[in-house]
Length: 450
Ligand SMILES: *[C@@H]1O[C@H](CO)[C@@H](O)[C@H](O)[C@H]1NC(C)=O
Ligand SMILES: *[C@@H]1O[C@H](CO)[C@@H](O)[C@H](O)[C@H]1NC(C)=O
Ligand SMILES: *[C@@H]1O[C@H](CO)[C@@H](O)[C@H](O)[C@H]1NC(C)=O
Image (cartoon, rainbow, N blue to C red; front, side, top):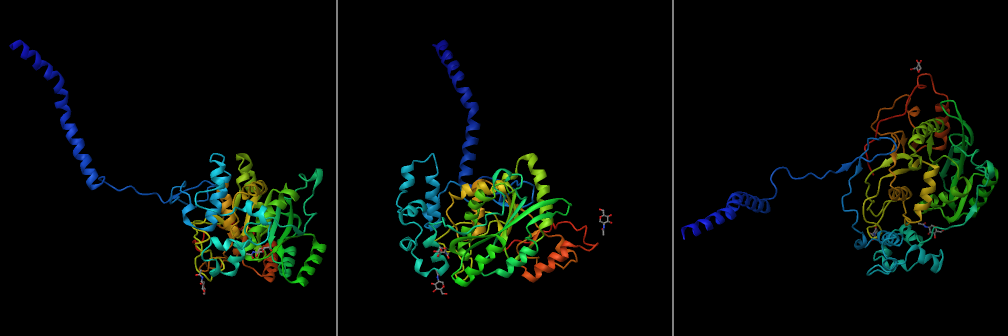
């Protein structure tokens, strides 16, 4: 009997001693778990990093916004017209999702660009008013935009045929820089001033002394004034630098100039190394710009980054303007969200190889009424981050900055300048005084606004 008990005691001891040893650990873990569940984790709460630094071609020191929401959350429920159409376009181009789902997203009966285009061509689509509850309260330019935004194919009225060489020597004789200037039919004086100053076509001596080929085109829509249209035809006969398309030249139609220009470029000036795209009321220091671009190219060729090269006055995490009276007004029923980083449309430079990629990706990005934001949307889809350069003054010199004697010798471009000022600045910067000869490009960055 005694030996039997003894045998059991040994067994009990054998099985239970580890349990007894583990008991305190078990108690500790459960009490801490209960404590954490009741009071939250002790110590410092986790800090959400609000910025990360994106790598451009060159470290620019700028901060890009940290994504606020999960990137996979669809905007489908937001009820904003652009977001819905873009969602459908994205699904259509997504090889993983079923095409059936793309064709009939749950609970939506909107037409996409393609289906509408095949339906009623490029005539205005007034049915859109059924899907935007506040359509009849929108400003006229917004109404005009949404009724015609399914169309981006407009024929040329005037073409610039001889700006770039075609044929076997096209590559060899390609311009280093092609200036593509947005202008309206009535702005004859601006175009004339640009031709005689910073937009001079031909071999331009960069400040480093090298000769580089620069070419120029003006991008226009049409005007209602027949007299102006006639004068424009004469202007084209004289200079051959006019490209005009069959759409009304209005502010909200500016994006058409981008997408149609990319198409023109891919056919008529394929080999240009850089494209400057900007307004007709700015001043550009073209020789200095050439120097800057050639230096960037020398750096970029080694790392093969030219096809992601775009530089300008980069605006980060701007939100749509929601005040009814503004020229930039975008209603919530049209677009929700924050704009991607984009270079201000006053003047931006990108590589020719990037322009070809932009043409391609733009087929998958629904038209947006503000042209520089649209460029930002396309760049985002390409995963290209625009380089910010403080010498692109698309918002002029900061108001509170003291005027320095050589200020204009430190910039690449400045907005806004009249034709008379263009002549004066061109003379001044082409023949710098000895004191300004050594001026270098500015590095001061403005404080963000808009
Ligand atoms: C915009 O303002 C006008 C008057 O200033 C008003 O009639 C209209 O309803 C407003 N539209 C929206 C969408 O708020
Ligand atoms: C853009 O041009 C088209 C074609 O001329 C026109 O129907 C439409 O109203 C214009 N859009 C804007 C916003 O002016
Ligand atoms: C400009 O630079 C050159 C050489 O880099 C120098 O010899 C000259 O003194 C400088 N001029 C001024 C005004 O700083």
